[in-house]
Structures are given as C-alpha cells and as structure tokens.
Image (cartoon, rainbow, N blue to C red; front, side, top):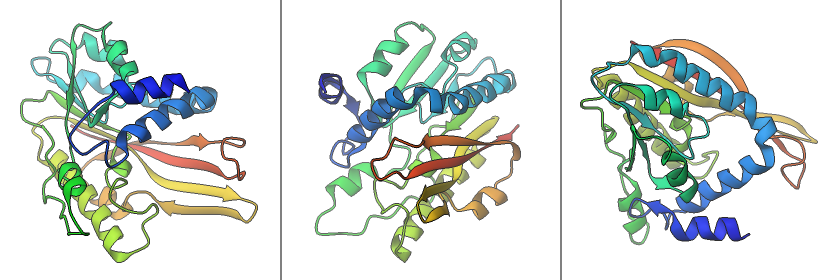
Length: 256
C-alpha cells in the first residue's frame, strides 16, 4: 500500500539496517498495529504506565535514555517530554510516522544507533564470514539520568539468526547479544528499567508451542527486581492466514 511504500522510501536507518530487513520489519510492525490496535492496547498501555510510574527515579539533571524507541507506541511521550532534562530516544530505524510524532515534543531527541554493534559488520560480511558480538554492548549509558530498555531485548539477535534459534551457533549468538546488553545496563550508573518478552507461545490445531525468546537464566541472574508480568496478544485469531495465534509473555524489571 502507498503508506508502506512512502514509509520505506523516507525511513532513516543505521548503515546495514536496510540490507538486513530492519526497515521492512519496522514497517511490518506499524502495519500490524493498524490491524491489531485493540488487541495490542492492553500491552501498550501497561508498558507506558510502568515507564511513567518509574520516571520519578530519574536524575532530573540528566536525560532519560530510551533504547528501542520504535514507533513510540509503547512510550509515554508526554511524560518523557516533561522530564526536566528531556529524553533521548534511540533505535536503529526511524520511520516517518515517528519523526512526525516527535514534532509535538520539544524536549525529546532521537538518535539512530546500533545497540548490538553487529548490524553494519554483519551486513558487510562476505561468504559467511563469522562476526562476533561485542562482550559489552555499545549502549550509550554515560550521562543518563535513567535508562529504559523497552521491548528490545528479545529483538536484538533476530537480524542475525533463525527464530526460534535451532543451531548451536544461533543459540550462542542470541545468548551473547542478550548478555552483552544486560551487562551494559548493569554497568550504567543510574536507574534502569527493562521491559521485554521472555516467552512466545504459538498455538495452532496441534496445540500450543511455547519457547523462550531470551535466555531466562540470564534475566534471573540480572541484579534487578521483577515488578510485573503480563501477556501480549501479538497475533490473535485471524491475524495469520494459517490460523496460528501468537502470545508473548512480557516482564518488567527495575534496578534503582
């Protein structure tokens, strides 16, 4: 449709993101939200509420850094804008809809940034050359009044592996990227709020098939308090042509 064509044409992205399909993925999320706004509403509302409820812990003299800004659908943009030092929203892709949305907020900035460190090297790799994830993710944590990683952790490895990962190599890549992200958040000298899905359940005529979307042992060992769990009906009945439904289990963790 013309909306998706224009979004693809005018999207901004970090080097390598288009080649790896990240722009098309963002457009797909935008289109799915148009179709499933009602089904997604409880998840988006819960995410916004949890972020809003924890903004008071942020240092008022430093900006809030949001990792995984996406389309801003799960962000309390007004509350972030009201933070005295504003907020810096970070993602590898910025669609025109997000650019337009942010015009209403003078205290919000947006930065294109690859928080995996793998997008450009992977896109440029030749003949299956191995590309290793950095030990510590290149997350901009210095000078942040608070960091919010929102619905991002499970997505970090998707441009580089099959989903769900079947091979030992893919599983190792996912684990390395998740660990690097969590270690970067752990090293931040400010409060951190992490929101991510941890389980995915696909259900068809043969019944449910659950699997982890991030290594749950890494989350369990991360030094933060779990504050909430809920379901996100990502693809309710009727979304997929084969009748498969998809529900994600989402959790939130906070470290002061």
